[in-house]
Image 1 (cartoon, helix red, strand yellow):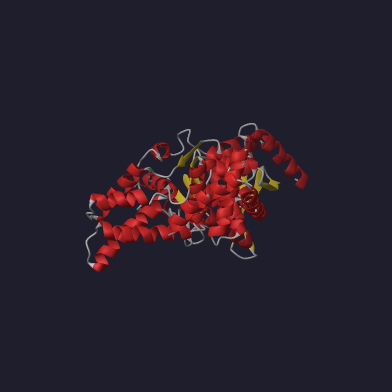
Image 2: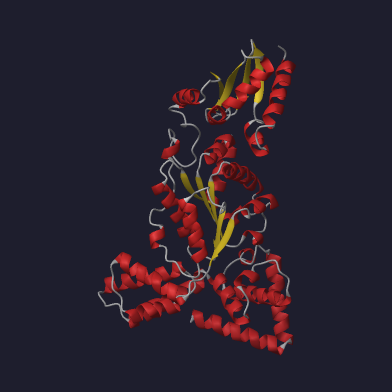
Length: 477
C-alpha cells in the first residue's frame, strides 16, 4: 500500500481516537505518532521512546485495537517502531508487535531495555533505575511531627496534611505554599512528601528545586533527550517544586513544565508548589501557567507570633535534649522575630557557645548571641527586614508592597523601602527591584530619586523618613 494510504488510514484512526480521549491526552500521546507502513493488515507506527510505547500499551491498547480493526478488519494488527536514543547522535529503531494484553508486551519491553535507562533516562540518578527506585530527593528530617503549628501557618499545615493523606484526591491540586524567607515552606512541602513516601509505598514522590528542574531541562536540550526528560517527570505521583518564582522569564522551561503539569493533573497526580509570593503577583510567567497554579489552593505562611516562636524553641529543646531557662527562651523568642530559620539559628548558636565555652546558658550569653544574630540578619536578609520595618511603620500589609497596586500610600511605602534597601544593603539594583514584585533597576533608581526630592521639599515626609531610618539603624547597632 502506498505511503499516502498509510497516512490516510492513520488519519481516520486519529479521528476516531479523538472522540474517546480528552484534548490534552490526544495531544500528548497520539499526535507525536508517525505512521510508517501498512502491509498485510499490519499497521506499523513509530513512537518516540520505550516509555511512550509502554504507556500506549498499558492505557490505550483496547482503544487502539478496536480503532484499527474498524479501519482494516478483524485481522488487523499493530506494530510499533521505537526510536531509541543511545545518548549520542546515532539512533536505532526497534520494532515490537502490539500485544493483546498490553501488560505482557510492556513487561517484554522492560526486559529489552534492561541495562539502558530502565524505562527512561532519569535526570537524578545512575542508569538502570526503575520507577519505585527513584530517589525522592527529600530531607527525611522535614516531617509533620516537628512542624510547629500556629496561627501563622494553620491553614497551610491543615491543607498539607489533607493532601498527604489523599494525594491527588482533594480539591487542593495544585497546593501552592507561599511566604517570605525562612517561614517553613520547604519544611511543610517536604513533610507532605515524606508522609506520602512512608504511607503510600506504591506512589513515587519527587522534590526538586526550580533551579535544578531548569538545569535538567537545559541538559536535556543539549543532549537531545527532551522526551526522556518529560516522560521521567510524567512518572511521578507527587511532584514538589520549590521556589517556582525562579521560572520567571524562562519561556522554554515554563512551556515544558506546563505540559508536565497538565499531564500530572489530568492523571490524578498531586502537585505541590512553593513560592515567595502568591501566583497573582508572579511576574514574567505565562498566563496559561499562572491560571493552572490557581486551580487548587493557594495559602500563605506568615511570620510566627511570639507564642509560636516559643513553641518552636521548646520543640527544638526537646529534640536536642537540652534544658534552657524560660527567661532565656522568652528573650530569644521576643528578639528574633523575622523568620523561623533565624530563630533556629540563634538557638543552635546559643547551645553551641554554651557547650564550647563550658558556660551555662543564661540571659547574658543569650543577649550576646542575639545581638550577633540580629547583626547577621540585618546583613544577610536586609531587604525583607527593611520591607517589614517600613510596612509596620506605615501600617501597610507586606503583600501590598510587592503587589502591582498603584495606590498612592502603597507606592510611597514601596519607594521608601527601595530607598533604604539601596542605602543600607550591598544588593544590586536588579536584586532590590526583584524583591519588590519583580520590578527592574530603573524603578529602584526612580524611587531613590523621588524619596530624595520629597525629603528636601516636604518636612512631614522628611520627619517620617528619619523615624524609619532610626528603627533600621537601631536594629543594626
